[in-house]
Length: 181
Image 1 (spheres, helix red, strand yellow):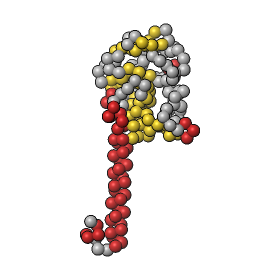
Image 2: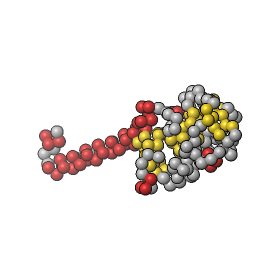
Image 3: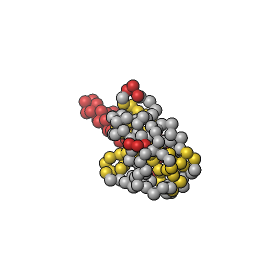
Image 4: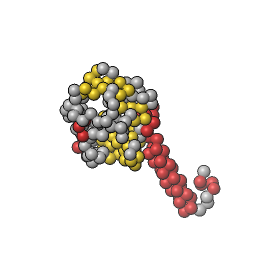
């Protein structure tokens, strides 16, 4: 197509390069906004699963297609500072009833399996338990239950599903931790 319109071979070469660069930029913007996004983990609220300084890939497309599942690790903007993304684990879906008793969380009367958490919960937060997860929202917790600001606190609360930036799919840094968290 460019060969027929541009007779000068140098101009044609420049036009082809500009077209290729433009398409690459377009692909990058589409991928970044609709498919994947990178995020840094700050703080220790997701230890031992994720640590401060880890870099993760947020899968936006998979999140949009399949929606939330119990156990997903998701990123969402912190209400008090929307520029700051929180990364937490989904433990409650819409309609679930979350209760905290004797240092353990219960979802719909069943004790939460804390295979990824440190120890018994010492901090109740300021939420009034039991908490019913609202329609279109999620109840999230950090894996480090005693070092996490999460849905137990009114500054986080139930997280609207449409505020979720994406699901953590892969840890890319540090390299020795590369893979699914």
